[in-house]
Length: 248
Image (cartoon, rainbow, N blue to C red):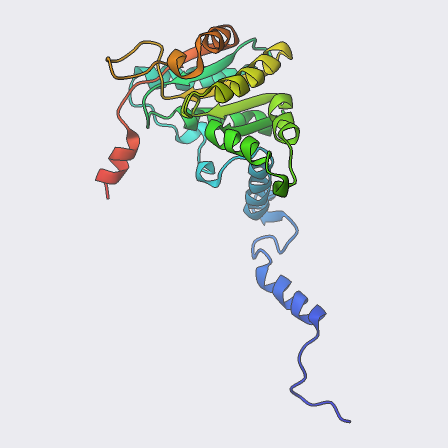
């Protein structure tokens, strides 16, 4: 039987074609781009490394573009918060307290916390990001046998990370279980002298009769422990997201 001209290409040939189509046109897959000033890391490799790093620290993709360089202070509290965050990042591990960024929504608390995490990760420190509500949901899901996970496997990285960013502290309904779980995380990290960076929309002073304080949300004992563990950095200002919406 003769071979026809319509014979399908082999799987290996298809793979080679696919690789050729996706190879970077700047470095041709070497990871190095040749410029008039010499060889440098290609942008494709930088982006790949950044993506791997963000995956390791569990950073959601919505924060890919958060850096100190693009945090634009709009008032003295934001300028002071930026200065403190950058100093913290440069001086770590020669610091003895974490940070709790406090303020209303949209003032850049998470932006600064993520920038700290990225800066420390680039310096080789073990960091981890969790939104507090998502962490609680992951712990709850671990009680389901079909998830093939356990509370210990979820909590171990949180307890052991050199620096933990815990976002949206106080956002979850303050049940006894929530407070006990938070207390366990904070006390373990406190006893192990591991630093934590928190963000919260709740303040220590009640803005009005209807608003709750951070102490109302997490309990007296936990808030007292945080005074010892972290420097409170309060940030004020309008919600920048509203500005983005008004700009279309």
